[in-house]
Image 1 (cartoon, helix red, strand yellow):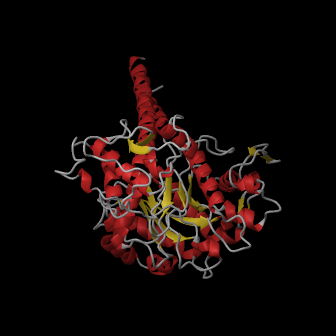
Image 2: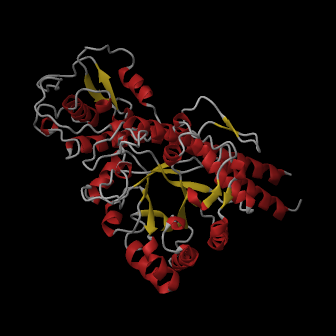
Length: 508
C-alpha cells in the first residue's frame, strides 16, 4: 500500500471510530401556542434547571433567542410554512433573515439546526415544492456567513410522508410526494443533514386500537411482533415506525442519511373518547422513550444507531385547536410545575427513590431533605437559585449573611437548608427532594445551633408548586454529566486506538 492510501484509510477509520462513540440525546420542543406561558427568560431558566441541553423552537423569535444566550442549550430554530414562498423565491430574503434574526445572537445563542418548513405534506396548501429551493437559499446564506458546517439545514415531516409503514421492511415513501422528496433527499445526503420525522405512537393506538395494543405503543409489550420479510422482532411501535423510514430510504438508495425524531410524546389529558390520554400513560411513554433512547440500543434494523429525539412538548398550550388532547402534551404546566414526574436523564423514579431513601427510612418517620455530599458545586448553585427564586418560592433569608444558617458559608450547607424548606413546603414527598440526585432524604434532624430546619407541620408558608425536580439542573447535570464523562472517555479511547494504529503504520 502507498502511504497516501494508508493515510486515507486511517483517516476513514478515525471517522468511523468517532461516529461509533457518539451518543443519542433527548431534547424537548418549546411550542408557544398559548396565552399563559412564562416569559422566555423564565423558560430558559427552567430548561437549564432541568439540564435540558437541546430545545426545538418553531420560529426565530428574538426574545427567545436572547433568553438562551450563554446557556449552553443547543437550539433548533424554524422557518414556518408561511415563509416558504419568500424564502424560495429570492436569495436576498434568506440573507436578510439570517443577518437580522440569527447572526446578532449567534454564537452566544447556540443554534445548531434550522428547519425549513414543518410537515409540509400535511399542509392544505401545496407548499412542498417550495421546501428545497428555500433550503438551498438558507444554506447559501449560511455559506456566505461561514456557518454552513456549524448549522445544519433540514425540514420536518409527519409519518404521512410514507405510504406504507407495516411491516417495517415494506416501508415506502408516498409516490405523490416524489416530486419534492428526491431533491430533498439529495440535499440531505450531500450536506449530511438528518431526515427529521415526527413520530406519534399515541395516534397509532388511538386510531387503530384493534390492531395496536396500548402496551406496544408504550414500550411495555411483553410479546413481539415479527416482520415476516426481515424476520426482525419488534417490542414497540416506535422502533417499527423508525425502521419503516430506514427501509423507505434504503429503497431509494439513500442509506447514509441519519434519522432524527423532532417530535414525539403522549398527551396527559383528552376528551372522554380519548381514554389513553392520561398522566399515567404520558409518564410511561416518555420515561420508557428516554430510557430507550439514551441506552443507544437503536432499532432492530439499525442496532446501536444513534437516534436523537425531541419530546413534544415543554408546556401545555391552551390555544391549540382540536380535541382536548391537543392542548395537553406538555411536561410542564404554564406555571412551571410538572404535569407528572419525568426524569429527562433516564434514571427511573424507582432508582432515584432507592438512592435518596437508601432503604432505611420507614413510613411514618419524620424526614428531612439535604444536599448530597457528592453533588457538584455548579449543580448545587443552580438548584439554590431555583429553590430560592420565584419558581421554588422558598424563603432563603436564613442563609443570608448575619442570619442563623449562613454559617458554615458553603454551598452544601446553604443548599441543604433550601432543599429542606422546599421539601417540607411541598408535602415531604420523594419527588420534592429528588433534585436530580443532588439531594438525599435523611431521618436525622440537621438542625444545629440556632439554625432550625423546617419539618412537616411547622411550615411557615404553603405552596402548590409541586414541580418534580427529578429532572432539575442538578438532576440532569448529575446523570447527564456522568453520561457525558463516559462518552468522552470512550471517545478518547477511540482516538488513542486510532493513534496507535497510525504509529503501527509508521513502523511498517
